Image 1 (tube, rainbow, N blue to C red):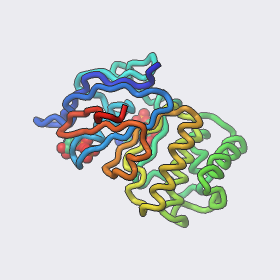
Image 2 (image 1 turned 45 degrees about the vertical axis):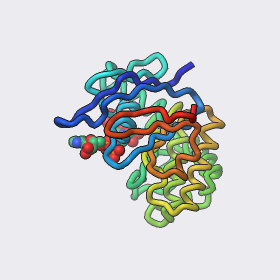
Image 3 (image 1 turned 180 degrees about the vertical axis):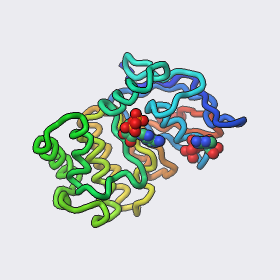
Length: 224
Ligand code: ADP
Ligand code: ADP
């Protein structure tokens, strides 16, 4: 069955539409790259799909849920329980250690510290950053910090991982490693990944590509 569905999404911040038509379906376990030039509407599309902003018209369905009509409190709860997020910068809490950062969503969901940190360490091992658990984000490299962010997104067992330029601040070797680890882990857990990128070498990790141009999102021919 389908996991996430966009139907005729439109969103404007001013006179010019930021998003002017998006229709597609994402299935469990799929890695979908959203590509397009800067300002084309990729982030707006990602934020609509993740229930962070509401489109002006159109529908986003997640399983049984209509994210477009759901109230803010329920959407927030659903984001926390079912979605994971990875961004380019500034997502780790500088005052917490790396393992505390990974464990934070589990702690907020009510897990006890020992259980949350044990589960976090499993993901950190998988992302090859278990040894930096006691360090703070300011003491680790960009590539390590981004792996910590990926471990945090995965530790909550999300059904969908939204990643907005997750490798944008990394050199190509670290970027490819982060993408390989993220997509492997997502496939193993049957989570879908919606990945915004403008880099072809990052999109190469996806199963399908959706190209956004002037707010219009189109399935790239030949990738289905
Ligand atoms: P991309 O992620 O492809 O760079 P965005 O979705 O961020 O594109 O932006 C699409 C268009 O909407 C751009 O013209 C951008 O300037 C505009 N835009 C995005 N967010 C806002 C906002 N919060 N307020 C006003 N305009 C915005
Ligand atoms: P609320 O808006 O109800 O306070 P949160 O701020 O806890 O909800 O956000 C829930 C999830 O959505 C978090 O994982 C967070 O990273 C993500 N999120 C919230 N705001 C944004 C945003 N402006 N851009 C991208 N992701 C966001």
